[in-house]
Length: 121
Image (cartoon, rainbow, N blue to C red; front, top):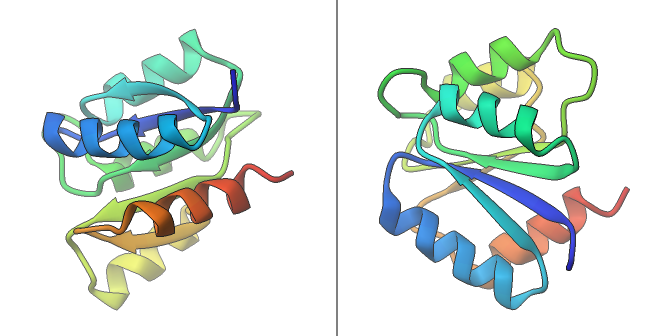
């Protein structure tokens, strides 16, 4: 199995699309439907090499998840994958530790390239 990626998005369709693209590229994918579930999944899967996270989700959004993860010892690189393109949101996410930002709809090859780059440590 390849490196493990956690996909956090409230849309099951987006999670399936991301899972398909990454699985075909050799990644192992774990899914979560919001930020709270994402944090729980990181506890269950400490070997996650990267997180792909939406911004707008119920219960706990992507920025809240970033803020909560900020104080934890080992936070994998996080790529925000969202419909949002506002520069203030991008800046806020990066200030909270996000390593990248990609706007939906995404091209599978660009997503795979970003995943390979962020997991190349």
